[in-house]
Picture 1 (cartoon, rainbow, N blue to C red):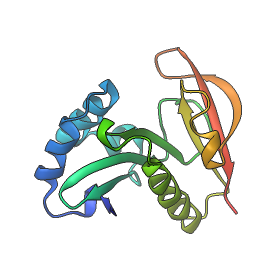
Picture 2: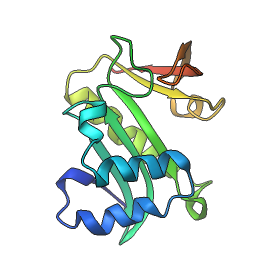
Picture 3: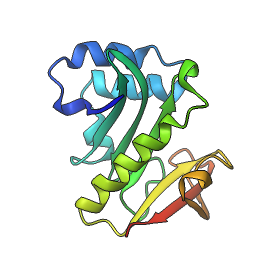
Picture 4: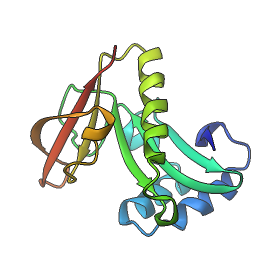
Length: 150
């Protein structure tokens, strides 16, 4: 297993097609944003897309961005678009990416790291705590989790 950053790989087209294989609506949205080169416009110029790979297979992915789907806030950075392909679930591979994002945020000087989700019980096992309910960009309630970056 290896973590790669999408904007740093040379074979972007190959990896872009791997994102397209996601069975998740937000994964397809990320694919569209990457295809049209709009992700950084939406989420900030410093946005990174981390990919956990097993040779040439995309196992899991997430973003680390200044802004996520909870828009009107001073909180940052955000982990978003967290996804693991079904055949790789149950092995805590997502934890590898969350740790990589944490270390990256720490090296960038972050004091807190946030995740906006509808899920309960997923991020707690990785050290995140429920912080508060907030409205996402569609006006829907979103559970915001955070972790202190030490």
